[in-house]
Length: 474
Image 1 (cartoon, rainbow, N blue to C red):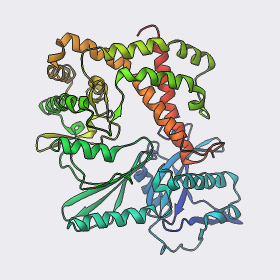
Image 2 (image 1 turned 45 degrees about the vertical axis):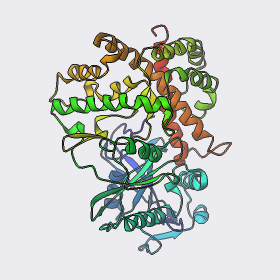
Image 3 (image 1 turned 60 degrees about the horizontal axis):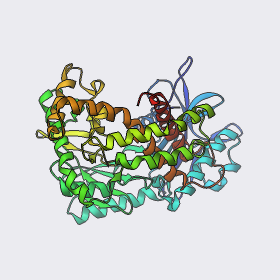
Image 4 (image 1 turned 30 degrees about the vertical axis):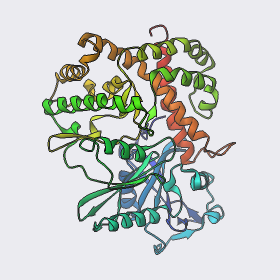
């Protein structure tokens, strides 16, 4: 299982099933077929053109094949007659939308009397079950009927209050289970609206705190509603670091980030920041014990869980993992601000200044955790073949008060190995908070909410198997 649709065999074809929804009343658009009705669908023939993360690419496929333009809400993998397939849901423009010949709007409760195909009916049932859970739960709130018109009203009100003229309708950028982003043109340039899932995500609160602390490097929102998980941000002009082939620029980004981490140590020690996740290595042993006791529950329903023998070996290795956490905690480098997703695409270079974006998962933990994401050789531009060593040296120079370059480099290798333990604990927390919001008992497998859980289980179990390989070497 993975995030991208897998095309196997020949020809490389997948069916794309579409749930097209009127955003204000939830009616679903069906297409006529001989003797009845069906979900509209089209054929995807190009491998890689239907990435479930890239809902706008799927939107383009639907527009080309069905002549329907709509806001993407989600895309997920399904299996139809043992063949790879996709399901994508879209919100159309509004109540005034009129279907053409051969199409019909059907209320959600009447869909069952129109669809004869059991698989298609299971897709709609899963969608409706997901919508029901989303009402009031905060899980993927943009699934709720009426969400998009409410968001557009809030956007207009916030811009009006700041004297900013809206010059285009909000258009989708991304729609993922952690957040949904729209963009629009305004009198002050391009503005982005971001909505965040309420499951284990504090991006709005974190962004408000960190931007007030370091506005030069962490941009403040134009408007924010932490209770809803909504914010408006202006566009940061400039290329991403991933698009820059100047090693001096990379080195500056590495040094500035290390400086931010060091500057965060006093406020963290004083407890003045409340929104960051606390993943200090000394606190993780309790998290290890907790997920070890919940292995079966957290893997329930997953296609490839740990076997009983793997689970037994993992539990016997718990003392080694706890000891590893304490070794990292006792390294002499204090806990600091950690971005948690600092890939080069999350850094923009604005007039020579690195600006760090998307702090959704940031935490307090060992600061060297970012090195395995930020500057591994495979993430560096091909034009910078010898950059890795120089960037590591630059980073360690910023921490020279805590040890020699050789000591810090050795510590970074320990932190890199330990990082999988941290990811396993944090992913378990994410799944636990998610499962507690889902209904008790069986939940439709062909639902977006069940698919989200399977995706997170995939990565979590992958971490657990990496931990198994650590046993005896840590």
